[in-house]
Length: 604
Image 1 (cartoon, rainbow, N blue to C red):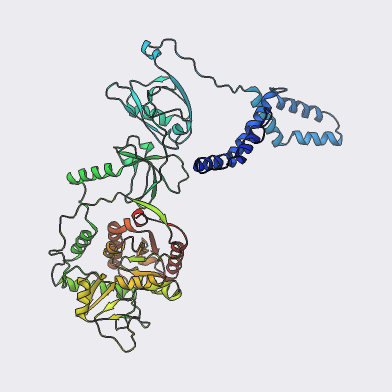
Image 2: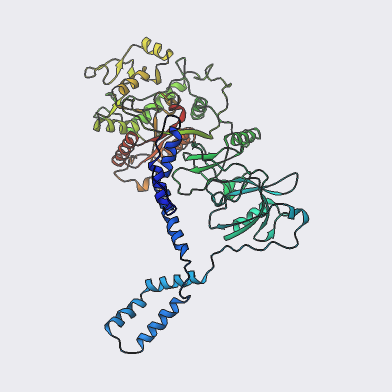
């Protein structure tokens, strides 16, 4: 082993120690960890800085003078008083440059300032019991961000206690304030007789240095350890509207769909979290799942909140509000329009246009309205109430050899998602495929089995319904149509991305670990001024009435309210060209970049 002398620098010593670390069988993990720590560049830089400071300290440097700026000004004034040689002119120009003036000014500030910490003296008239306690004076610098700590009143003693420390905040970074510490003074003002909200207001309004007088907790709790729990928010939260939050400034506002990293769940009521993608390193408070569910149940009990429905019940509820939906088949049928239907209802290219899609689905619904209730005997009210609060997620990207993710398009009235889907598949047939639908109608001369449709008998179709083979199905003009699970699997087995457009009720069937669907919600952009600003390139027809526009808007709002918490991407369709380009960009991102998915889809 190399000899380390007293003259060997700390940086060199660290390099020698790192080179001598050879993991053995018994301590392999520990030595590998130690070698990785010693090899960190940041550690090396710190060692170099330490050595330089030590060398500098040996010389005990003192400033030659404390007023270099004044000396430079006097010299410049002296030079200007007479004729100048060439080198004197250069010196005068140099002394008048703003950069040199700034350097000299900084030199004077440093030379005249004492950097030793000066703590305020302790008061002489301390109470007897106060003198016996260990007192800690903490000085923090507060900018615009909160201190990152909350306080509470101890019911037994009346003391003001630090209730929690937010990871990444000023209090946490200082390492000087701990949960359980008793707060006595803020900037010299005794706060023992103030309410916690008054103290919080004093702290929030303070800027710059804040001096705290603290009685340390008898047993300091462990420092916060950052966890790796990620949640997708399924509701909007505004802490300044939440009267229950311990400190509104310490709350974390978020929107439905935001990804939150929960860094502490030690408090059963208020978790600490950060928004993924937010540059703010300070954690803030969010309501825990248990607390949020508890108060939602209370509001529901007090009739201030409508009872949440399970997805299936929500579908029934919405349909019944629109019209008394009827059902000729034993189970609820959900109609999925075929990709290609060369009948009298199609355009010249055999594809259903957006208006036809809306008419067909509306026609199907009204036809079922006249025939009986679908929910009879099949929608038990004993299903547990489900509150949409958080969903634990993780990042996922299919690896080579894995099946691609299913891509599901849902669209509100007027979105014409079938047409959009067709164009994507037509332009990228190698990457994207279509789930060929089943039908009971007769095959036309130009149609091919397994290409336009799978043609089967009505008896076989109804048997498949009973076997649960369809994700959705329905009846139109006395013919049954449906999309089967097997038709989706067939596309995925070809290593192609399967694009399906379905009624949103089908998401309950498709949103599983088996398919890992990426769900895109397409809705038409409806200008505030409606028809006045419709251009020729708009995806909305000029013949659409004001009632149609209101129906489209209401359709998008209802779909977002009932199913928006499952949506991965929302697309506002301005016109077919830009919508196609945007959809292709999103699909490429899903193929190449990790996306957030429910953790249960990945961990098994």
